[in-house]
Image 1 (cartoon, rainbow, N blue to C red):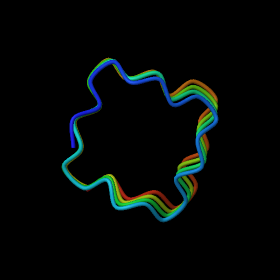
Image 2: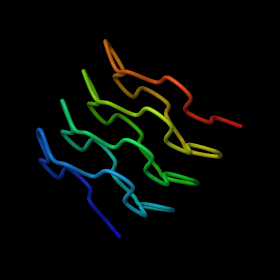
Image 3: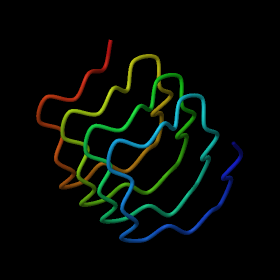
Length: 79
């Protein structure tokens, strides 16, 4: 899926399969992506401030210049 520049503020994405999603520069502040599958996602420049990524699988995700200020990453996988 291509979500380039998408605006998904406060979206509920619990357990969502977002594997390989292209969300370059997407506005995703305060989203709840608890347990989401973000493997291989391209989040370059995305705004994930205050997002809940508890237990999310971000293995292989591209998070260069991604804003994760105050995001919750408890138990999130990155490798």
